[in-house]
Length: 425
Image (cartoon, rainbow, N blue to C red):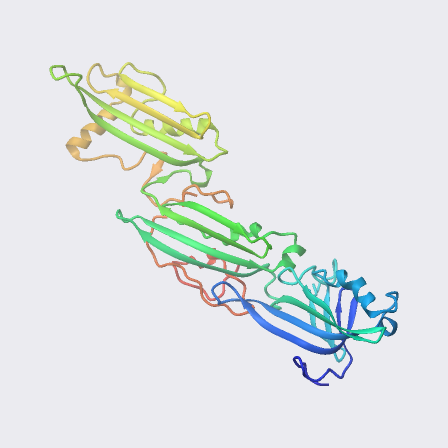
C-alpha cells in the first residue's frame, strides 16, 4: 500500500474508507492529512492534537449507494446537508485498520460507546465538493473534516486539560501588598458534556486559597462562549486589621474612628472635655440588618461606651441603619466633665488618660477586629468564606507537567511558595 501522500501523490491501493455519520466514502486519494499539536495560551501545555483530513472519493449511486437516484450530482446534493453537520462519528480505515476515530470511545459499559463530541466541540466538516463528473452516474467528491483529540491519558479522568496562571505583587507607600492573579483553564468538551458539567462548576477548585490578613477584591470570571475555557482574575489586598468571624461573619467592611478633645463654645466660655466614637459597617447581600447594628454596638462597647441605655452624659448617640444598602453607622459622644455615672466603669476615661499619660491605646476592637493573623470573610464561590492577605513572600509559580499529568490545583501548590512537579487536583 502506498503511503498517505499530498495532492499529486500516488493513490492508496488498499481498501480504505472514511465514515462520517451514516455516510461512507471509498477513498481514492488522501490529499490532505495535517496533524498539529495545539498548545495553551503560554505555549506550555499541549491541549489537543488537531487533525485536518481531506480525501477524494468515488461517489457512484449505482455501484456504491442505494436509494439516492441514478445521478451522482443528485446523490451528493441530497446528502450534503447531513454530511456537513458537525459532531458526528468520524472513522478512517486504512487497509482495514482504524487509524483515527473521533469522538473517542468511552470505554465503559453505560450509555453510548463513544462521547458526543471530540475534545473541542467537533468533529467539524469543512467541505463537500464535486471535483469531477465521471459520466452520468458517478462523480469524484472531495470531503474535508477537522477534529481535536485530547491526549489519551487514562490516569487523568478530569475534564481540565490545562490550568495556568500568572501573579504580580505591588507594594504601596505604606508597605501593604496587593497580589494580582490572572489565570485561565481549558476543558475538554467530550467529558464535560458526558458528565453534565460546565467550566464554572470548577471555579472553587481553580481559584487560589486566600491567605490570612487580606481581602479578596475585583473578582472577575469569564467563561468562553464555546464552553471550552474559563479565565479569571482577582486581587488579594493586604488589610491593616482583620474582621473576627471569617467565613461565618456577615460583615465585609468596617470603618471606625475614636476621638478625644475639648469643646469651647466661645473664647470666654468654659471648655468641656469629651470622648467620641464613630463606626460604620457594611455587609454582604444576604446579611440581616440586625447584624449590622450588632457590629456597630459591639465596636462601641469594646471601646467602653455602654450601649444598653441612653445616659445623660451622652451628647450624641445616633444609630442609623440604611434600609436600601447593607450599611449601618453609630455615632457616639460622651462628656468627660460633670457628674460621672459609676455604671460607665470609667473605661472611656481610662483610654483617654492612658493615651496622653502612658502612651497606650487599644490596637483592636475586642470581639470585632484583631491584629493577629486571621482569615477574613470571602466571596461565596466556595464553602470557606473572604476578605483575603497581608504578606510578602515568594510567588507560587507553576512547573512543567508531563503530557499526561493531572493539571495542578493552586491549593496543592501553596507550600510556602515551593512548586511541586505533579499535584493532585
